[in-house]
Length: 382
Image 1: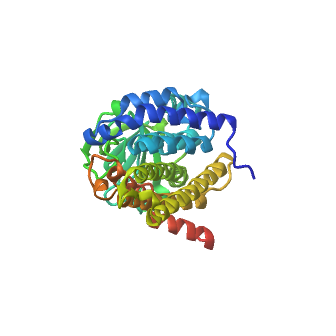
Image 2: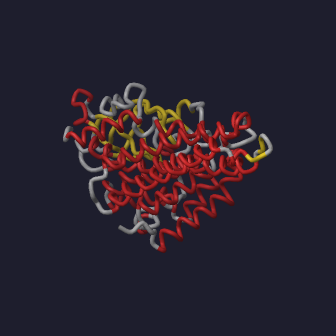
Image 3: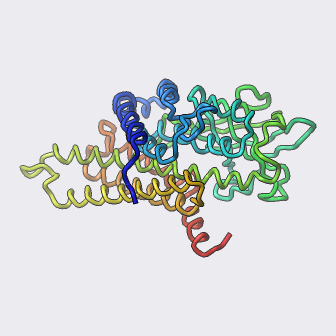
């Protein structure tokens, strides 16, 4: 078993690390304070191929693999969790279903601009009554001639306030349950009957917009259907499996930021005549943080490797997502504890890491849902 990254993977990781340290980390606090969408950073990441890491070059991506994607996303999220989730959605929630299920024409039209970093994409799944119960969609898409007429409201949509394109989950027949679900690609900027609704005020990831998507007799060309009718739910589950690897990588990056900041502070902070890093209580906290984050990263790389090799990765992505996000939350809390009173004020980044980490335990499937996914796979249940 070879744990060493390839030369190409190492080159990309180092390139993204350098870019993140020089261009993202210095503005992370300002992005958090102003809630500003980091458009200039997104465009530069696109030019580097990071908005479509595993997307083939003919569709605007970098043509690399998902192991490289995990490495890059950890580095970005370590610098700024908001930039991390924007990158994750473009690659995973939006990019994966189009790359996997889209036609050649759909990929050229709707995937290439997002994978190339020219615009943002989003995934319209969650509704006020359909969160963990993803099959309970009420957003309706009725086929009339060569168009779907869409009515409904999506909530908590990452990138929803800025996205050009959306993969939209809707039902053609609510009484059919999951069998009635389809996925449509929607050009949000050029669809009459669509508008952005409420933009949420959140605890963390404040430079990443979270918005309502409102559809009122919106017309979407029938040719924008991904796959065939009846395939939407399976596409959704497959896309979420891929997305969970991205969120796990985001969480791992946040956790590593908490560790690095706590480690640096512990070497400088003096109490009782010595640096607090000399106290065993602090040393043990740092050791636990480092050990658990290393374990989380290895789990993420395994899930990404399985995806790259076209093997079943549902259980492994669920494991990696919930373990990495739990570890990140623990590391962020311990980071605040090591900073003490300074960890609770905005002058230092520790409190931001704690606010940013929490959402990773919730979105793209709560950690309770991940445990259900894992247990069902273990028990052979569907």
